[in-house]
Length: 169
Image (cartoon, rainbow, N blue to C red; front, side, top):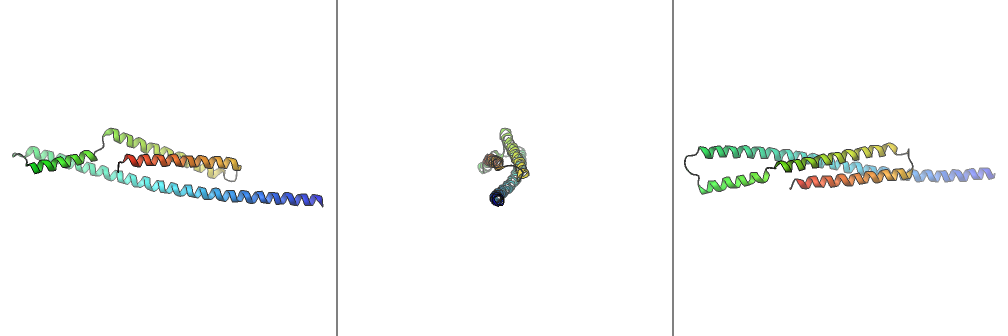
């Protein structure tokens, strides 16, 4: 009887621990889903930035070709250009200078894109490792891995903001 009572108590204790672990797994899965959602948002933002960058490059190319055409037309004109014409050309040149990225700015921008990609890849790897260890490792290890994933999210987010700010929009 005493042995059966001890086994029942042990069974209840183990069932309680199992429910606790199930609850913890559910919380971890909810957090994991939130991380996945945030990753999708970052991917969408990154794609939008890439499209915007392409559009800006096309606009710069178009304005550059228009400016070179204007310059060649100005050289071919015999009469001196009017003040209004000079002001218009100057305004267009100023716009071109604002839009045109110098090589240093392009390099910094590409470096930021590279860093963002590296942070994102690191985040994906940690996420994969975390997913693989759910149910296989103890709670403390899972907490550490969750903390690492969160820290990687914060770093990727900072990298994203730096990238976005570099566009000077």
